[in-house]
View 1 (cartoon, one colour):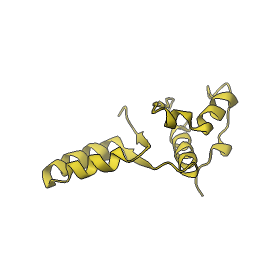
View 2 (cartoon, helix red, strand yellow):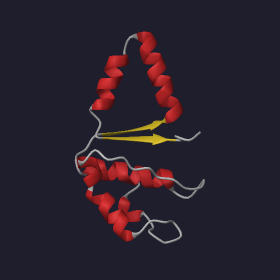
View 3 (cartoon, one colour):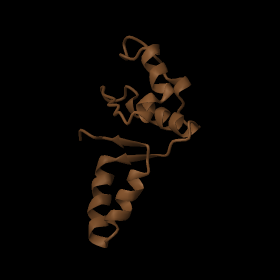
View 4 (cartoon, helix red, strand yellow):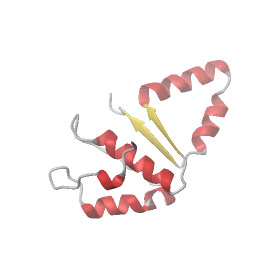
Length: 105
């Protein structure tokens, strides 16, 4: 079962208000090409929120990709070696939303 924005718990302790969640659900950040950075301690639900936003983007008709940063770097490196770098860039360019996990590791 996919993560959905309706399942996200908004609270002061999570530093996420219902108004912020409603704004994200609208998808205006996608239309305006804005970035969203989700931060927090381990186990607080960052990945779940990111997946829910990705699901919401799909519902709204936007293409998206989910990539672990290590995997993305590996893909870029390998694509440069096997000649598919431009193909990879073109694929990423077609995505409205790219969700990057473990960015700070």
